[in-house]
Image 1 (cartoon, one colour):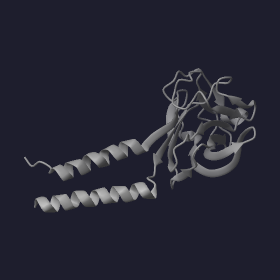
Image 2 (cartoon, rainbow, N blue to C red; image 1 turned 90 degrees about the vertical axis):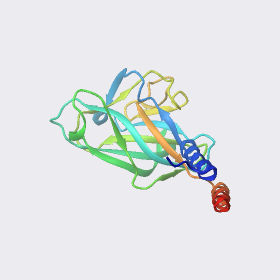
Image 3 (spheres, one colour; image 1 turned 30 degrees about the horizontal axis):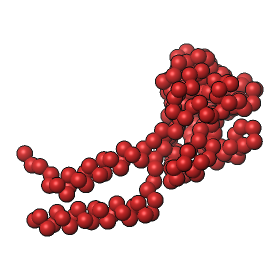
Length: 208
């Protein structure tokens, strides 16, 4: 059996630690109780807000929403988008995160659907964004909501529907979703990482 030398072992541990530390979830209530659902067609567009907190250099990697369809006969596309924060709900469109045909949505039971941007979307620190889902055609798709506010980033946010406007999550139950991000090291941190890797390599060569 071959064992890693100390420098290589330290490098592997450092890489694993940094990878784990730089992946984060900003909003997540997917596992909360399912207390109701709103139809995208008649109530929508529907949206949830999330906040990035103080950390800079975040990149949006994926959004997952809990959806179901009440009928397989109404088939239309859904669009999931990222919006800036407006005066009373979603503001300006920033990017489209993905589309989905309602024909692909499970009928009569909720399932999680993940939308991954083609390119990572940079997010600013201390900023509120909105994930909006809208029906582009006739469909019977609904977005589940939960009164459980204990999930990551949920209690302090807001939700929006075209029918009811914008409301704090503490007043109206938010829709169920998760927002995942990746932290990109700042230039100084990246240089420090490269320097550390160089020192480890030099130590490895000296051992030889």
